[in-house]
Amino acid sequence: MAVELKDETVWVRERIREEEISKYLDGGKDFIPDDEIGRKLAENQKPDRARVREILAKSLAVQNLTPDETAALLHVTDEELLDEMKKTALAVKKKVYDNRIVTFAPLYIGNLCVNNCLYCGFRKDNEDTKRRVLNLEEIRRETEILAGRIGHKRLIVVFGEHPQTDVDYMIATIKTIYDVKTKARVGEGNIRRINVNAAPMSIEELRRLNEVGIGTYQVFQETYHHETYARLHPKGSLKAHYAWRVTCMHRALEAGIDDVGIGALFGLSDWRFEVMGLVYHSRELEEKFGIGPHTISFPRLEPAFNTPYADRSPYKVDDETFKKIMTVIRLAVPHAGMIVTARENARIRREAISLGITQTDASTKIGIGAYSAEGEDQEGDRQQFFLGDTRSLDEVVRELAEMGYITSFCTAGYRCGRTGECIMELLRSGQEGKFCKLNAVLTYREWLDDFASEETRRAGEKVLGQEILEVKNRMPSIYPKFMEYYERIKRGERDLYF
Image (cartoon, rainbow, N blue to C red):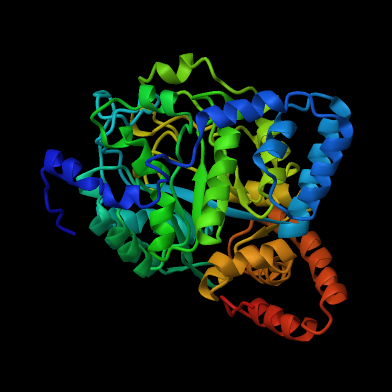
């Protein structure tokens, strides 16, 4: 694809549409009330046991918590209550999402950026970073490895904010990825769902993006704290416009993108404030559109090449606090999928599973063109930050099986229309887990036959036996059709789903 070179200054000046911000504001103010959040955190510092247990019961009923209830959980320090919170978080996850963990891979497309975020290795003024944007042939090669050699079915494609990676380039990228079909051991390797992590866009651009069949549109606010946000995103840059960013999910939902993903970069500001910001964001979307976030992510500030702020931030989050953050979000927004990534080490990711995490990545490389490149897995001057876990998808799937979890490669919900308001109701009622259990088993059978090592296959067969027995006992009317699909997949058919 020939890239039309655009004047960067003009492109930046034309990006933000004030009329697409003001329509979502209340009296000119956004929905993150710093003073109110501070007050609620102060007023809920000493919750008694009875109140905490009432809050946990509400969460277990898959009801969203209020900001006051969330603030109360954030201040729990009693070890017995903390243990109850963790056990309830896992119970909520299993009630809503059953015994599944979804896996994906990130694909970083380029590291050109017009912004100067103080904590980011890709910031514009980091002259030591080696800049690159993949062309469509390079994207095809990356996809062939991800889909054909590793066996991923889902990608999160990460775009920088730059005229060379604008919406036209995004659309061409997505079409190229979906077009890749490779030979696997038995069936075929292909990407069936592409989620997008990109900068805020206009409603028109988001409609165009939606037309090519994206899954979740993901934008992280980084920090919800207004003063901190202004300090970390230099004035004059696109990202300095807090309101343009915090209303991006409003525009996405108005544009017809049903599934949106939010997150905060923990380590930039007070972690309690950030959790409250995520809860306020979720409530805002539900109130305005009837759809909360499909996913909430938990990136934690990590060291980055030639980026001193990432090392010296006064708000760094330790492991125990990080686990508490995940626990509280699972309880506060019980319907949402929760993502923890390979930023974290293997131990933290294992522990996160028991706190209600539903998605994680594997075989992760975040250098530009890193999947098809020879040499070291991590090259600081080519990637945004340093990873904590570089294990293969095969290793992660095997570990999950040994923990008793089934890895789901299912993408049927998106293609069957179980998105947006539909999936929110299914999640709250516990019905989505039934569809997903069936499709998790079918796609797991596919992946084991097409990509798994012998050791992973043996571990996976044990999980399959347990899951099939559950289908037989819990869904006897569907079981015969399910087993017909299962046997057809064993004989080499692919992509059968309910």
